[in-house]
Image 1 (cartoon, rainbow over the protein chains, first blue to last red):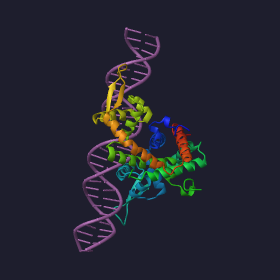
Image 2: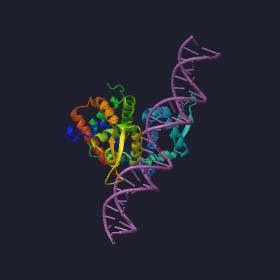
Image 3: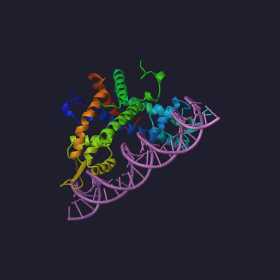
Image 4: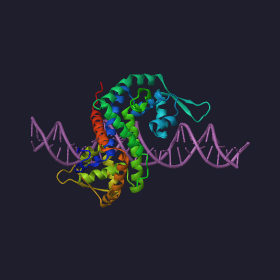
Amino acid sequence: MNKHNDPSYRTPYSFVTFRLARLQSGLNAQATAILKSQAGLSIVEWRLIQTLRMFKDASPTEIAAHVQIDKGQLSRKIKSMVSKGLLTVEIDKKDQRQQHLRLTEDAERLSQRMMPKMEARQNLLLVDVSGEDLAIFYSVVDKIEAASKIRDIP
Amino acid sequence: MNKHNDPSYRTPYSFVTFRLARLQSGLNAQATAILKSQAGLSIVEWRLIQTLRMFKDASPTEIAAHVQIDKGQLSRKIKSMVSKGLLTVEIDKKDQRQQHLRLTEDAERLSQRMMPKMEARQNLLLVDVSGEDLAIFYSVVDKIEAASKIRDIP
DNA sequence: ATAAACCAGTTGACCTGTCAATTAATTTCG
DNA sequence: CGAAATTAATTGACAGGTCAACTGGTTTAT
């Protein structure tokens, strides 16, 4: 019996959600520190850039689906990234409601420069985790995420 | 080889941090929905209540250490919870800088009523996860969290 | 053809999270 | 003792996150 299932060791962190919240706050602080000091980017900006490298010319709605960001927040973020020279916005010819977002050269260069650092960080986070354990970890993440969509708790 | 380590399937979510961020956002939405609709509480309020049930008469500083919340945010939250009738604040007799927080009867009742729901939710999240897998999951969470404290990425 | 329904993005309001500066009480130490 | 350092909590400023109402373009269905 270890500290994670010993009932006599019951703290708020017996809840997996509490543990994950604390983990998330540590990861955010770390990523914020790296990105801000080395590239002047926020986490949201970094995620948007990476998402646009994957899904070229994506629209805000498509991006929102991929990175689970609120479309309102996204709209404002796009505006600020355009004024920072990281993005350009183009209106779809066929459907004037839709925008296509594109990374500028500056954003591509920033991404090229930071990617090795962010991958090094990823490796650092997982350096002591075996392949088998990581696979199990991801499968549990998948299961918890699926269950998080349920809204009716009996 | 599964989708989590297939390089040809590389998306932003190849980053464990992206996966965890998305998971966290789903969990937050779920907890927010349950707590708001059934008890009129926010997640932060729920966490504070649970933490105070564990660490009775704790001071804001002690709580901040346990739940990893910013002391500024905590100060404001305490004020609002006092005005909602969930907390009382007492000044320490020996050290007039320190406060001791106590749950009101209302807060205790709310907690009693909601705890079974929140435990049911916890069980729902983990229902398909075996004990062994959960132990591995927690050990990976612990390792990632430890590595998240490192600030100097080579 | 056109009114209703729908969809993409914007805006406003409000709460949460983080950082830094400040105030006031207590402790340390010359 | 009493100035300096430390600690607890507060406050201000600002980015991030969520919700809902709104604007304007497009599709659907009569």
